[in-house]
Length: 332
Image (cartoon, rainbow, N blue to C red; front, side, top):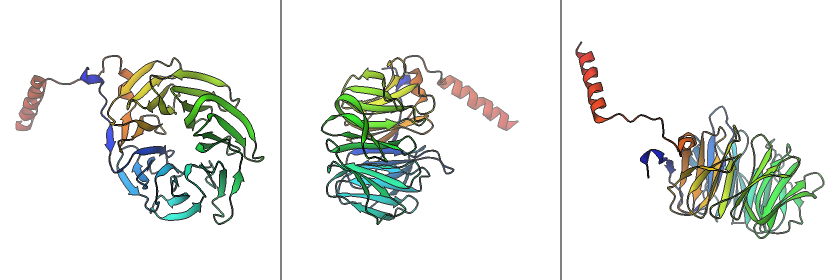
């Protein structure tokens, strides 16, 4: 393989078990941040640009399946197999509140206005906790057809979406009435559901298919078959012209949104890829894997994956002549 096409990621070590979820904060005055959830029970916070470790949230007693940051990246939330969801101070790492559940919690999400936390899991109940009154009982939206796998907010916190581990489709719930208002039909269970930054699309991964749905009218916009079973997909947030997908074959693939053509491929993980997410500016994306690492890849090198790269590699002779010029200049 032509060496020019090989993308070298930033490799983030630290987790001792598989990484199962990733979440980027929006861009804040202090930059942007990346939080990772792992079966090792300790979510980790990193600088989203460099991948540098900032801190580890310690307190869960079981695998952490989901994690997220609020809009200002001041608080983190995590959902765990220890039957709890926790809210953390993202600056100090302290637990601000722990919400007990009666079974494994698989998913959590902060509302856009950061006042509410949505959770879901094996109990088949969606819960909405008021973070201004954390001791108050949560609002419960029951009748989920199965164990909840993913949750997200949309329409300025008026709608929530959820998917199940044991059945296909994404259900959209009206927050006020607590009723299902629409279902996005898929053949396989949806393992990843992401609302695009501009609120236009819902990106889903089910089986070996990545689908894009109109987030306002709920029609299917595009559906692309993948080369293998994919667990996660993410749409580039700035231009919306590319998307990434990762899954069983350990590779992260970059595709053209309009044509579905594969325009880049990244190899490096040593186990299936469980989660992929674009950074808020779209200049890079992260992948989390069964191998326990998070890898951060630059978007731009792969734009030329099928053509020559423009980067010039000087020959040893050119380097030598440059050094001679420098030495002559310093003597003068």
